[in-house]
View (cartoon, rainbow over the protein chains, first blue to last red):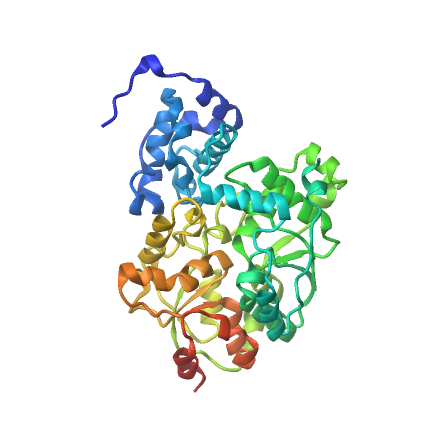
Length: 152
Length: 276
């Protein structure tokens, strides 16, 4: 078990999250989220109850933990939370913060760059287009002006 | 009934069989579709930058005309609905689109269009070939959650069960029915995502002849990754059909028009069983 040193805690991360999603302060640690979580069921490192506890205590390292990225955004926890904590949104805020500090799992970063560069996650190959043609679907050849979407 | 078809960027490339079958079914039901040429819904941007994700979805909505959008994928549906709620003025101004248009524009998943616009009973009257089989339906989380975006029950949705049963099949109960397929964590930890898929497929094995889904992300896991899952579970061999492939058969559309050659888990023996 990891030791919590209260001298190292800092509420800056919690306060930033709270500003975007105030519901975290209602968490009373019942663990319904964790009990409902299909990710926790196969990989107990991802424990939403614990992540919220770490956040509320001011353990700012939580942002740099790999496990915060594992939320599947299935919303089972949110629907069952008796306190109305919007848990997937909290996780999303944490991963957004992590990215702005330079932390991102490789696969997520690759997907992000692909969409930012090309406007799509999948660019069809000539093989994909032949497959579409055999199904009597039109070929896809669109290109998107991503500057128009994101500016600059 | 006129809809703008928003396929998203994933379905047309990795699941064109879902697109072709949905289009054939709509033709047969006189639901007119016009393809909306638009990029990604922004879903893959969410974990990294949710503001950009909303902007991307707003851009998609800005390209639409007056006709409501029909989606084929639950993740796209949720991204577009969320953006409608969280449209920020800065993004709207840059994209030169007015808030009123975004708020007015309807976004409906194909399944919702069938039930709400066409209607279950009229659809039941159109069934030509009752499909006598046991089906495990998988909704896909973003078909009904979060409840702030949808009207279906977040725990016990029933639209897809109803739609499967009007085709003459039995929708079987199973554990973890409303749980996630695992696809959203694939980019973070492939092993975790496959273990999640495995749990669901194991719950279904022996109880159902096929699985019926409504989302290309779920199809990616249950159908395309079923071989990987079998390394954890042993042989599964559970065919996975997008709902319009299933409904198409019941409407009497010839199977060769429903893209079955692209399904990864072989469907031949299932087709022989229900069409004989």
